[in-house]
Image (tube, rainbow, N blue to C red):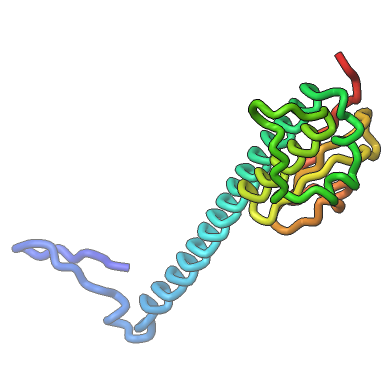
Length: 178
């Protein structure tokens, strides 16, 4: 706290704390408290930034997995004769992403072979697009849809997507042929 003393040739500032001697060093304590408050504020801000980045990353993976699930549902609609292959959860376990069945181009294949090629292609797409990703189709639980596409990432087991929401996407579809 400064107070001013008027002198004939100008203004002279005097520090009242220095005159009394009993308030010496209070400025240092105030500076330390201010630094502590500033440090806590910066740590809080860094924590918020981390949460924001995590949420952005999760939204990115969820968006990508949603596009893959829609791709699968479109393939099912394009090949309705092989619905039993697409909705057989054991087929998703049995068929490897490394399978190249050659059902694209000029090769003539059955609808079941096309479905198996689609499964291999989608599994490869998930493995390349999502970190530790997996995909399957299984019966929906507590849903109006007949079947659900389950896509998981970040090491979450795809079978646990029935109940979990973190790092999982469930997209239901009704088995109808239009």
